[in-house]
Image 1 (spheres, rainbow, N blue to C red):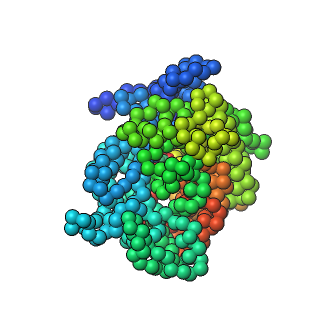
Image 2: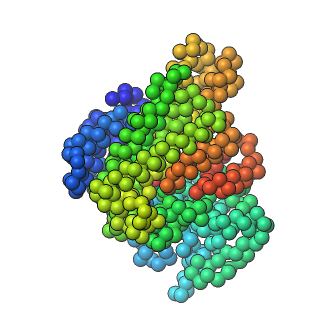
Length: 572
Ligand code: ADP
C-alpha cells in the first residue's frame, strides 16, 4: 500500500475512518478500504457473473488500496453503515408550493446530513414580490437560496466538511439581475455556488447587441426586456469580482442529454460536473492518473495504457454496483437514479501525470494528451458499461434514450470530472485536471498551518536527481510557492512546474475543452486568473468556453474572495 503520510492520516481520521463516541478511530485505512470493497461488492449477489463476489471485492480493494481509483468521499465515508448513502450528487425540484418546499428542505437535510451535495434549478419560482392568489408575496429565488444556505449551516457538524449547494437560474427569469448580484460579498451564501443558465439564443442576442426578454416562469408573459449585452456584462463583472456566478451552457448540456424524452436538464450538482434531471443522483469516482506512468521522472517514462484500461473496467463495475447498494433518501430519487443508472468516472493527478512524463501543462503536447487520455477512458468505460449491459441489463430507460437501439449500455452516462477536492488529498496527487496550485501548500491546505510547509514531492525528487537540491533553494520555493523568480533553476523546470496562476487562462480552458470533448457529463474546473486580470479577460474566457463546447465555466481571479478557496479544507 502507498505509504500514508501524517497529513493524509489526519484527514482520514477526521473525516473517513469509523470512530466510537469518543472519536477514537475504529479502523485503519486498510480496513476502511475493505469496508468499502465489501459493501460495494455486495451488489454482485444480485447478478450471475463469471467471477465470484469475493473476486470483485478483492479487485475493488486492490484498486483503492493502491490509490489507482478512489470513489468520492461520500462512498468512502458511508459504505457499510446502516444507512449507506454513497452518492455525492443530487438535483432536487423546486417550486413555490408550500408542501413541496417543505419536502425539498426535508430531503435536502437528509442528503446533506449524509455528506451529499444538492443542486437546484430555481427557474420555476415566481419572481420575488409578486402576489399570490392568497394575497401573500412570493419570496423568489434568492430567498430560497437563503433558506437552504441556513439549513446547510445548521446541519454542518464539527469536524465534518461543510455542505455544498448549487443554485441555477435561467437567464430569462425576471429576477436574474438580483441573482447575478446575490454574492456581492465573499461572505454571502458561503454554502452555495450559483450559476446562470445561459442559452444559445441569449448568446446570439448578446453578440448582436439585441434586447432579451425576461419571461414569467408560470404565465410565459414577457415581464421586461433588457439589453443582452448589459446582462452579460453584469455576469462578467460579478464573476471577475469574486468568482460567482458561474455559467451553465444549457443548450450544450441538452445536446448531450442521454434521455431527452424524460425532460430537459436545467440543474447540476454543487460543483457542476454532473448535469441532472430533478430527483436524479449520480455517484462519482476518480482514476489516479499519476499512478499510470511507468518509469516516472525519467526520459523513458511512458503511460501504462493496459493498467489504465483495466482500472477503468473495474471502476465502472464498482460505480454501477454502488447504484444497487446505495440507500436513497426518498423513493423518487431511487426511481430516477435506478432508471438512468448514471455514474461519473473522472480523473485526478493529471498535473502530476504530466510532470512524471516531463510534459509542461502549458504545452500543446499536454492538450493533445488530454484528448487522447480522456478518449481512451471514455471508450474503455463505454466498453465496460456495454459488457455490464450484456451481463446484467441495459439501464431501464435505455429504450427511451438516445442510445437505443444501437448501443446497449448499463449506464446513461459513464464519465464526469469532479474536483476531487478531498480524495486527491488522500491519494496525495494534484486535484482533478487542475495544474499545481502552488509548490508549497499541500500541508497548509490540509492542516491549516498546523505543520510546517513542505515542498511538492515531485519537485523535490527532480531537484534531488538533478543535483539542484539546496537549503537556500528549498526555503525560497517554500516561501514563494513558485519557481518563476528563483535564480539558478533551469528554464525547463520552471516551465514544468508552472502553477495555476502562471498558466494563462486560455490554457486552462484548452485543458477543460480537451477533456470535455470526451466526457459524458461535465467538468468541474476553475479557470484561474491572476489578481491583475481584467474584466475583458473574463469576458473572453466565457465566450471561448461557449465557442469551444463547454457545458459550464467558472473563473477565479486570485484573491478576489475574502477566503481563498484552497486555504482550508473546511472552506470547500
Ligand atoms: P471528494 O473529493 O470529497 O470526493 P469532490 O471535491 O470531487 O469530492 O466533489 C464531488 C461532488 O461531491 C461535488 O460536486 C458535490 O456534489 C459533492 N460535494 C463536494 N463537496 C461537498 C461538500 N462539502 N458537501 C457536500 N457535498 C459535497
